[in-house]
Length: 287
Image (cartoon, rainbow, N blue to C red; front, side, top):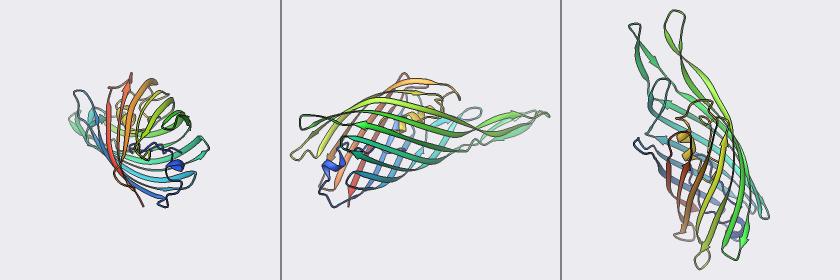
């Protein structure tokens, strides 16, 4: 069973839980992750997340909270600083080598206020809004030898966000109205992972996926890290469909029996907006 990280969480170890912890009585896992999305010639937003998971013999359930700070996103008129927070509930189950998972998340985005002059009057625009997402995925593990796992996967997500729009009233005044952008995103790819160490306690993996969406301004990634596409997507033209690729790498190192260091990097290729690289590091604790 793999844990497909939801929200802004980095992918922790991709080691199948039932295999790695079949005899482990520590069925709770807490994780803390932080990272940055790097743009060329632009501000780089930072993000962090906390999660708590309860693992069962063939499944898991997880609650995550995450936040993004810094960087700029398109407001009503201009690109302005924005902060966002998200709460996600996810779960999954394995049936032999086949794994299924799903999630639901709620969030909010808070923009800096935009101010401009119109007909000699000062106009203030607030673009704050909420977000909602639900989705699921399926993967199949194919073992090659004792330490290599190839996992093709499919995922589908529905996302909805509130956006602000400037509207000119009959008298010439300008006000802000909220509208919603929503879209469906599908992804297909494969993750390749190798286990190493005396007890196969460490792992290294690479992944690649093709992603298509009906609305790139309201979408999330279908690979192991939802961070990179969500942050980049918010800068796109509302209603614009898109297709792109994502490639990434991850590593997990067991620092002790119950503590692991997790590293993850993902990059978009061919995205409608600016290409970006997401870098994430985190620690997970079993108890």
